[in-house]
Image (cartoon, rainbow, N blue to C red; front, side, top):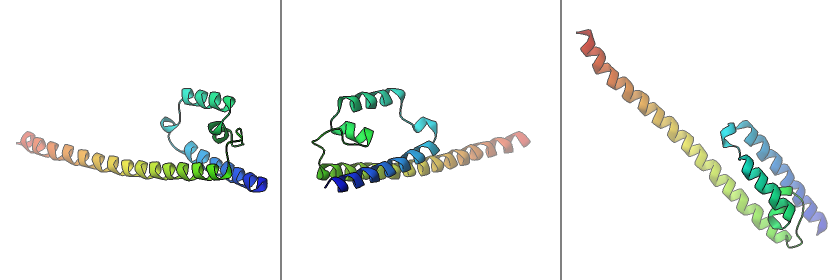
Length: 117
């Protein structure tokens, strides 16, 4: 069982690195605030299940394999949902930008016709 837990922890570390590399490619405005980082550091010092998540190594004996897998599934679902929503929001922003550009051009065209006369 310990070997399996070590494998899971290693898998979480790999996934964490993937997520970190993705976040680093994103705009800096999307990164967490300094206050959030300080809060995570405080939580990891106190121990518990959340500390295990933030530090990528078991900090609480209550973190069983089943609980770890359940937390991982839920976090993955949240991540996937958030990514999907972000993609949708970006598409909506592009659509709104195109619509605003079209309306501005449409508004200028009658003005140009009047000023030419």
